[in-house]
Image (cartoon, rainbow, N blue to C red; front, side, top):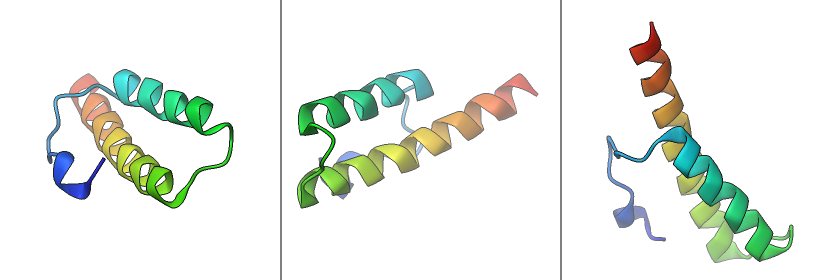
Amino acid sequence: MSPESVTPGSARSAAELNDKIRALWRRAGGSLSAQERVEYELLVVEWATAIRGEVIEAA
């Protein structure tokens, strides 16, 4: 996953992103390569944005 593949305002839900994060850790066996670390960091940022959006919608 490259930085260009993450779109601001992504339509992916926090739950979907959480599943992707968990799958990445499972595939990596608990130790991320440099490329996997980049993917993980991008997913976490996107997940945090999705969570914020869901909290704002709930308010």
